Image (cartoon, rainbow, N blue to C red; front, side, top):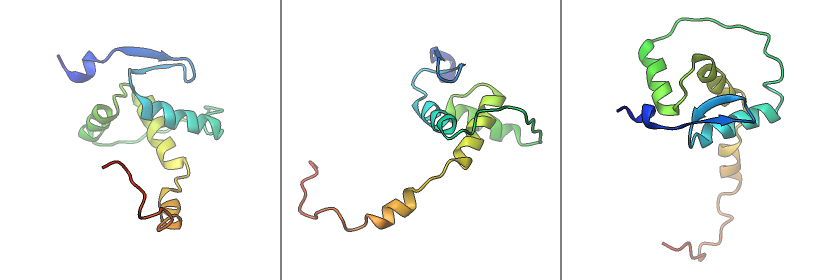
Length: 103
């Protein structure tokens, strides 16, 4: 049986849609998008053509089964502000080099 088919589905009360159990990244991104006000009103429809292989691979990687959920997740990933690189540069050299990290 396929790995994706084996995953149990859970209902997300926050988002109102089904997703694979353990879809923590999906939940985190969609929660952040919701909190940022990006999901308030759904009045726009988009359409386009893309590779079937691209869609299949994206669904396999994310565990998202529905096209609309996949598009919404992808757009939210792009739309949400990501300051990781900036924060990483700003904190460079701020950790004590003698700090024991346990490995």
